[in-house]
Length: 263
Image 1: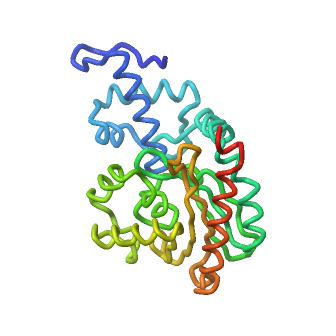
Image 2: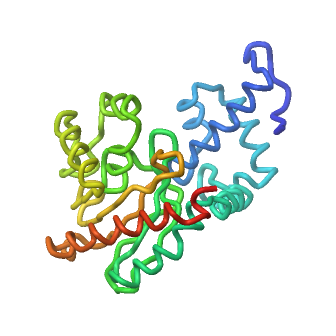
């Protein structure tokens, strides 16, 4: 257990609460800006600066967080990066998808990605970058909402009905001018995606980017993530989009049948 020093009765902090706060602090670095300061963390979590400071110092001492000369705030440290890398290496779906995504990259000349479902969001777990000079790349480990982009939409479309409905009822931010945010329009889009088994995005999550994605299911029939072909939008012509539909659909099925993905 990470120690954070003595806590006053005013804070009324139990061991379980402290552990939860430590986890909340680390999650802020996974979803927020690269650098965070004591005041920003305190405001976000509703915790006193004194408590936040003790947590940060404890995490720094274990290299879960670090500071840089001349930069205000804290960032993820080498121990956190190593922990994340270890988790990715042990993720069976990632192991199963790697050779398929590599082959798909070579076949299309575009970047291929694997996303995993994480709570009510998705996170990029793997990518094989295009060898072209102009290409699209993604940030591994960064969370994205499910309503924007082909990978998010194809995961959302295949969630259990009650969970999908709860997410549809929540407000949706427009990441670009093409992001579908109206509930009725998004619902209609997801129905098309569920029927087709493939989602297409042209500038919905990132302006100027095109992508085609298919869901990957586990042995229990639940959606576990998505694979995509992505690149500059101008290269995603109607003919190539149709070709990529078939390619990602077949590739996703191949990954789901791989023993490493079913453990």
